[in-house]
Image (cartoon, rainbow, N blue to C red; front, side, top):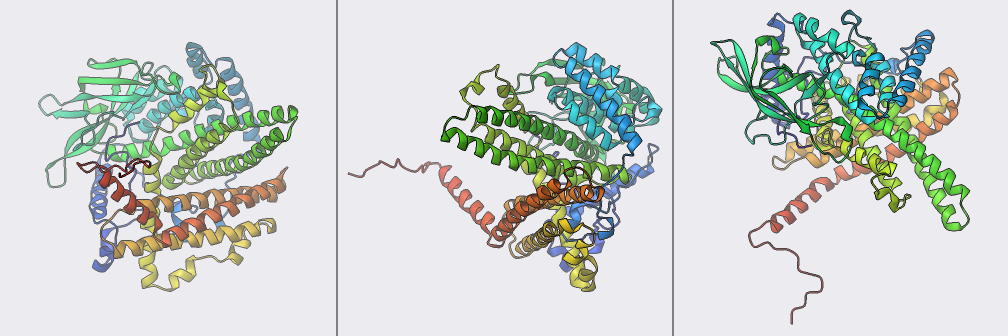
Length: 628
């Protein structure tokens, strides 16, 4: 996927005033502001506060401020934990669980029967009412919780194409419900819930302008009170079957001073409107059933009723859509890992049955080690998923930006690594088109193009880094702040069963390392005005991801031990392994950042690239070149 610049950069730094996360320029002294990584941050926050006021003053759906939940990755950067709330969410009762299991069994059965035929597939999805799983019952939806949708998602994503089509549809319905007018909800939600109309997102473009975020533009004419939409969107999921598009367009909106400034706006566009053209399906490296296609809009007339939320709020809406889509994308990668895991288990049985020599036996042992490795990965991903959805269900309108970002990047990375490891054990038949692993590998590569992991990781690091910076300022002003917020091993031990204490020690040490990594980068920022800190920030995100995986695994295993679930001791071993491995990774990254290696390597690579790109093209000579 080719992303336009400056829009899906995932660098949002808290549009709203969270209880203990918000940052305002008034909170910092002049000396403090000099130490901040970017002065542009204050301009962004001021503009976002202005947009917040526009939301509140509008006659549309009442504005709801995002709240901070007590379990949040951002707090890890400052080593802040509330021990009394260290618990894995328990949201489903026995009765609800039994009833929901019947529903999921039915979904699994029907999806297997209609796995390949597209027309039957859509009819089945309608019968199962999956189109309306996230729509409230007031609008004829199922109103499943986030945890329930994640459970259903694990079934849906066995067929990647079905999952992506449903995800795009649900993003449309949830956006209209959360930010649309009553008129928009009444018009679209019941039909979206039943599957009578199908929605999808049209945000991406192949060729974005260097100066503007998007080439697709909407211009408002005061004389007739209409918006005129022009442009082309690319990689639109299920465009051929969609009836409603959420389109992100460049617009000119008056700012506080009355000056016209470029901004983004989201529109609801029906496929029946004159000027909407859906192109033939694009050929992709994988997941051909997604029906990715281009959609062109030429002088499409839209009334003000087609605007979602308010004109100029597209940046915020796009970010909220992206945050929620990450959960779905991560579930897709997790389910594909489970499919691949079953394939590996079958391979081991086949290899061991045919093992007649030492070489084949060694291959079996190696594969067993890999299976053990990805058992831990899948366990950690499952733990992160249901901890995150549990937080969303337990706390209204909560902020899960970092949790969702960590989940999707970890899931996609682990799926790619797992696929690569498996290639060492398959023969050349996998290169044949009809081989099942051929299409699987293609799908894995295609999934990596949903959103660049590097950008998402930078967004994780930036938000955590900024939180640590704010806390560092507070620590310097108030030494008691450190004693009040930091937890030692003894305090953490009280929240966990004795079997978990060894893992807890490594987890707490990892938290300390993350805190010092963030502090070290802040010190580098204050000393060096020039140069990018992206290499260190990416590693900082890797540290935070490892810690969240350890944390979720610890909570899950601790719950299993308390409830005396089957195989609870095995879960304890898995959680211990995850914590030990992640702690080693964290220590290695901490040492690398302290030594300045990421920055050093980046400097060397830039120097080499400058030499290679000089007009005289100073390529290294061939190693067998002789001067005689």
